[in-house]
Length: 419
Ligand code: EPU
Image 1 (spheres, rainbow, N blue to C red):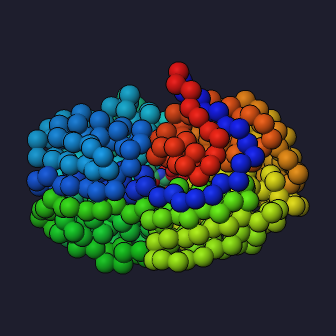
Image 2: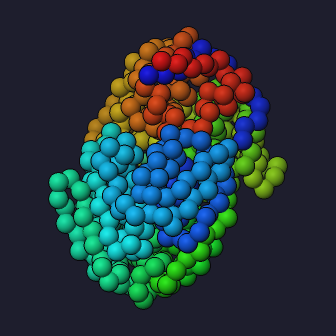
Image 3: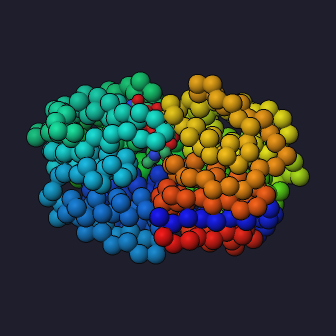
């Protein structure tokens, strides 16, 4: 397994270009199962999770061509309607094929994702919504067996809580259903809106994009698209934190500026300075010492859970006490014990972490446990004294494109050791 070695203490300076958003690219790639013909998707990041969904689509029978920043997908020859355990267990987002397969082909078998490093993460709300649309769903041998031989029917669905992939699955199911579907308390994440825009380009009829009520009028068929996926707001936010934690100055290009308001607002309170010289360019300057600030993760437009670990890494160096409350996932603090190995002072109580900033962390061997936890360890390593060795970096490769190349371009002393 590859490792990343970081010599901490370099101030990061320069320009970085943000890649396409993983969490928008995944559902949009799955949505090509709904369309007739070959879709051409641009701004597709080169990531492990993208290769996994490409392999899953191929397994279903689709033709998928991945090349520099681009995916061409034709689903006309799909005939295998099974998403197998060995793929789903490596990436929960595989469950995104359930809605499209069921609505277009009347049948789907998708392995239940099982446990996860950050929490229980059930898919009950996806299944409840599909059942309300007339699907017959059984759980057998670890698989969701779903059938709708006469097609799905429009329904009025209220999500008990806003679920991102749940909203995406139901949205994709509804675009080819008979009649009108209303999704209430839908997730408002920009990635959901990006999917809805891609579906609209295919010919879907969706109202309320970007709000928590989506009204979808089913159509008979959808056509292939050419579509550019939005930029990754969490990658951009992670580079903002890199500027903050190293007291550096980073120009972030191709940033999805409007999707970053909550993060920018909190980072400003920590002492970071922001300039917006162009529509999708942000210049971030870190302070000489970070201020402690409290955060609470919330569904969009609140502070994203996918930035909680990276924000905590910053707070480890801040001048005071920070209270970090995680409200989305029940176990998303695994990075805490790794940060403590580097000298961080963190107390955990339920879903709250109290971080007392210290003047310095010391580099140490640490282990990545999930994607965003890994990013927090890399950030801590950039600012720590001495060498940090992050193992199990396949986690970071799931969601950050060429991370060590981008960071070394900014002056970080970082390298990968291939296993
Ligand atoms: N939930 C249920 N039942 C459901 C669905 C969700 O109880 O049927 C709960 C979850 O257990 C969680 C909460 O609802 O407590 C929110 O989960 P959500 O369904 O919104 O998460 P997700 O769709 O599984 C996506 C992202 C995650 C991101 C979350 C929250 C993708 C592929 N994944 O997951 O991204 O953390 O939304 O914003 O879009 C990451 O990129 O590192 C990552 C984990």
